[in-house]
Amino acid sequence: MGINKVILVGNVGRDVEFRALPSGTNLAKFSLATTDRRSKDENGNPRTEWHNIVAWGKLAEICDQYVTKGKLLYIEGQIRTRTYEQDGQKKWFTEIVAEKMEMLGGRGGAGEGAPREDYGAVAQGFPDDADDVPF
Image (tube, rainbow, N blue to C red; front, side, top):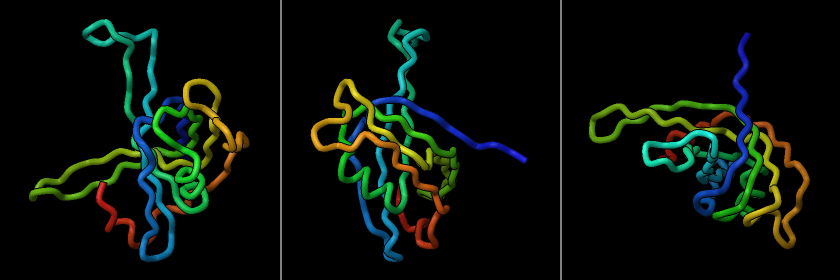
């Protein structure tokens, strides 16, 4: 038995990339920055980690509609590591597959018209044509 659960609270780093795959499944991708103000980098600045977020299905549609750069989000999901080949070299890519998302207040938070409730969405895994999506 194992547990693969991630909880992140951070600011969206770029607007959502949304697409409908040939299978009809919706996909949304964006980055999320989490900053640890207690930990400093080599320049004395707060340490920031960048996370690649992926949402599928209805949650992807909601992300496309409401999530924009700068918004503060709560994301709950799982870590997934995938491989792909580029220029003959095997590359690794780590992402967070979002299962739940909540828009929080504050800088760019749950603005006008944006629902604040929790959007529960269970990731159904990757559809058959997910390998065709370049990351």
